[in-house]
Image (cartoon, chains in turn green, cyan):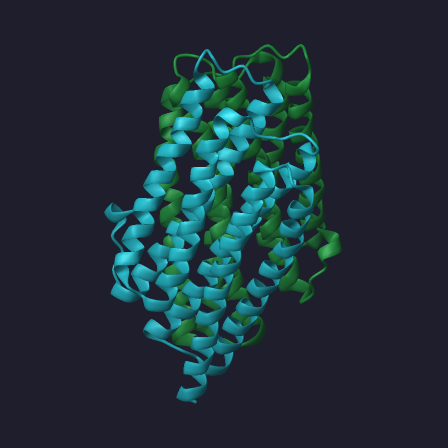
Length: 217
Length: 217
């Protein structure tokens, strides 16, 4: 029985790692599609999001079956329940990448993002991809130094997000109102992606230490 | 044992209903604070959000204890796991109301929202409040007609959200870029609030019927 249970846990862990791998790819390609007004790539990102949703459903079903069949308690139980939370965060990261791709498609053949803000978003996307990759490494190794690194990366992301609004507030900002909308929402999506990565990092930290330190986050 | 379990389930159900009541109040007051640039009211909304977060934690702990102590299976198990998802959706609705209150505070003593868009947002907030109230009624009665009504309300919300961007795209839109940002994000928050209500409605529908009909949502 115990052996089956360990195999289930391992499988759930691998599915979470796979989800983090897919959302890193999704963000990478979603930003590329937006930066280059590449509608074909955008379509691919949108289609690929269904795979992430499917993985989440599969993982959730497996977690529920494990709860029903193995009746885990204590830390094993928290691990399974935690995996449901983590899969929801990762699924949401996939949605946010999809939103960027949808914006590419909406504005095609135009570029949605003006050049002067594009470099900041490229940096934000780069940090997002790093966060998704670090989440995968954290899930794999449970090395809490990685959780702290994710939180640091997210602070960097928040700083870049704030800088976008400083640029928009500057009197030299001359984009049209719809472009200002696109820039606001893009910045919000890129920023939220990191928050969900932090949620996973918090959850892993809690599962490893059994302690919840709100001050740390 | 069975009796204890039923009492646990009932308690979890009541906490979800209480959360939906609190998020309806939060949205009501958050919109009031934004419409009237009422920073004191905004502070109250921000402070009250901690209560919603606390309720979520309490509910989640109770759910996990129930899983550990009662080892529920089949539909009881799905109900408990579903309650974890629903509490997360409701908690997020509280966060979105808080974001509106934080915007009130950020722009005080100015009004963040220009008058010409205020009526649309008032309608969106009204629909959000209705959705939160209907979610409470749905959780209480499990009457699936209410779930369908929530989905209808959310369609109305999506229409209002889209109309905001039509107004912004019109050449007569002469607000400053930061105001355009505030309007975009406010519309997004109001729209997302409804999505989370729909998530709860979907979950209840699934728990009642055992069937998942994506076409319906």
